[in-house]
Length: 441
Ligand code: MN
Image (tube, rainbow, N blue to C red; front, side, top):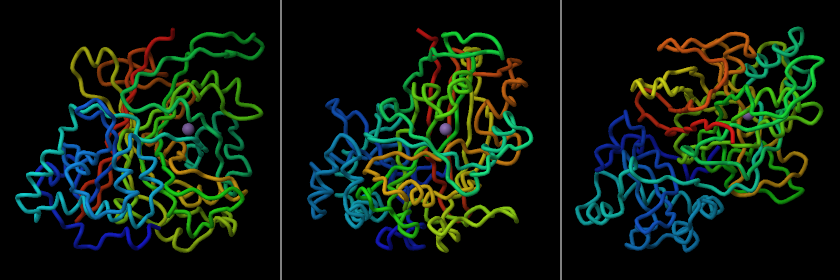
């Protein structure tokens, strides 16, 4: 888990901010969360910020105003950068000191002079242009939801939905980092090779089964040297924070290309990430035991097994997917929820994903992105993609305005949201991850 230097005491969870909107649970950006972002500052230059209430605290402006004086040089330099990468590479103690300083600056007990100075570095988040926060050299997508793996597997192999390796190996594939895009960036319907039915010849055309996948992104803080695996007991310390991720997928291209080497062009055209990176310290009160393995399932092999990870390595995080169609938009209708699931039901914990990824000596770099894979639950309305919700395009989804969908259409917008709820603690929001589908070129 996080180092003790980055842990909050119970009293810290009771603190309130002089920024009123931070104390409103509906906003989900309390004093204790302080998610990082990169936004376009007054001068048009990317600037690192921290979300509080309905505003962004500009850390570059704080640094210029002397509000970060006394913090280490590397952390002050990192606050003046144009991505979060150097902040992610800073020492954990330095990151914790920055977080503690920001919390003090925004705390209800801050004096008038501090408030006045900090106020000048606050900007409303709804009008700010939020940018891609991290430059990730590598992106790996896992398959950690056994419910997703089973539902998808059943479509192809009704008798044996799960392959024999699933309960031993955290399955993943290497995704494409260059096409990671920030929420709000439109997604162009890709063209690709598909083969509609057995016996027919493949053709090259815009995908006719465009889908989304509800996922959570884990950003790596500290990497590991090539050849030195990260032991499971240390793995959680390597995570900087979490974001929402939508792994856009062209199912018709995927089903034709995936054998024998796995997903390729069906996924590499775009992957959306939310602009806020919520630090791991924020999730401390929302840590829960790893999902119970059904009796008869094998125990994880030793390199994937750790008592503390089993006791508190999962995160209670609610994830929702919404759809807005062009007709709904024209009629001013609210987004319609398609599913609601929880990250805590993953078969593998984040620490297990990192321990497995590095177990062969593969090196992770600061800023690398690991995604969980589609997060689905055991119930039909907990399915995190259309492939599952439509049982492989055999059933259509009925929308409240009378429309139906079996796949995403041009002009559709998918919105992912994530939040943590626990009585006695502030609500934590991960914000939104949005993407609007554009017609193929
Ligand atoms: Mn995926």
